[in-house]
Image (cartoon, rainbow, N blue to C red):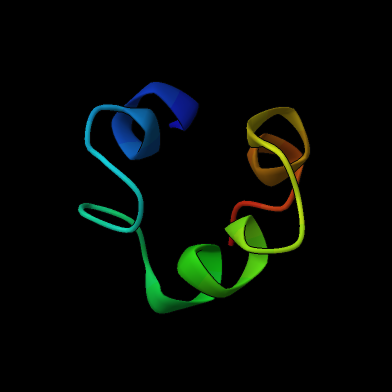
Length: 35
């Protein structure tokens, strides 16, 4: 799942929730916070 969200630039293929989290957390942390 993480690879899917990482395949595009910031917030391109990510869910609204992920886009919100990525602003406060690095890639590694976002992986664990995936909805």
